[in-house]
Image (cartoon, rainbow, N blue to C red; front, side):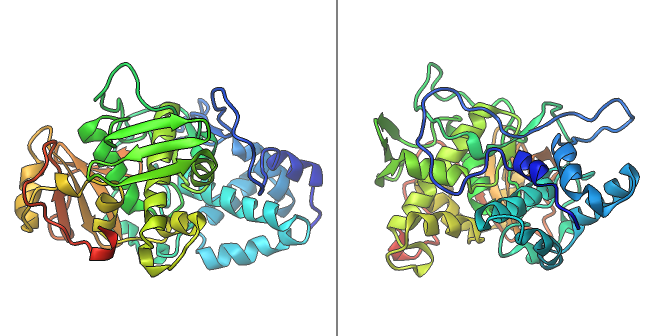
Amino acid sequence: MDLNLNALNTFFRFASSEAETVESGPPKAEYVWAPAPSTGETKLVPDLKKTLFEILGNEVDSPAAFDKLIEKLKVMPQKDLKAYLQRFESALSPERFKRLQDDLNLVRGGWTSDPRGIPGDGGSNSQNVDMSLYPAGEVISDKPLMKADSFYHYHPGGSEPGKKPENIYSGFSQGYEDNCVITSWIKAGMALFGQKDVFEAVKEVAQGYFVTMRDGFKLYLSKGELQLAARNSGYKGDDPVMLTDANFMFAVAAKRAQLVNSYDRVGQSYANGVKSLNDGASPWEGYELLGLKDHIKPGRDSNAKLKELETPGEIGVASAPGHNFLVVDGRQELFGTRGGKPDPTLVEQVYVLQLSKVEAPQSDTPERLK
């Protein structure tokens, strides 16, 4: 197949494997998924389609055939997708080839007739998620979706402490990485304490941030580490500020994972801390790595807790086969959409949060992570 290298350069116009200097000023969205044109379609369609057609168009002989190819790629098993993409490897640098894989995974996670996308497709546990267990939710926003990897210009504080997210569903959501655990807990923390107030304190300095968590754990996160985390969270969403805040919390959790040697990786690098969040995790690791263990109501009766979460204003996190998700006002968040009530026959664990500290907090955490 002849490759259009100019088109590939356009496709990768922003890609770079090397760390860039963190610049001041507002971030710019690199990808925008615009609402579908007035053709009767109601789902989100990315403007990536044009450049992807320039790259993959030689595979087909008509626009209709191209659409069928994309539909095929969206549901193709990961191992088959990798085999398909090998034809591009010789024409691209290793870094750019990896970027092609990641960006196509993002398309698979967000550009789809099912608004939930295909979560976890870039993670190690994607084959463990039976998507038939999670019926499509309600799309409650028609704003264009953005890729989160350019949103790392974080500044703490604001004029409205405790302000809750305007849209906890699609403001930011899980993309193609298998990081539903930390994602659900970030959402829960935002919904409970406020979008920028999940941590006890954050102080910005020239090269990074000093963070104090609500359980007293303290750490320092560099701006370079934040940038690395943002480029690997895989998040998507329609709120630039919320994407930035979510990336920051993801980055802080990855730093704590590094410092406490999560997953028994002795002396692991920060990159491994990030990877640990994207490799699937136990439900308790999310609240521990965000410092929220003292805000989990005690008790292990999942049915009783699900009933409690039906009360307006109650916030929690539930785990079910292959997936963790936020529950708010009795409804589950499903990959950026608002779902119905969680199925009690599927739910394995339920955690209910509260603002005040619990006197005798329940913890499933090994001592090494405390």
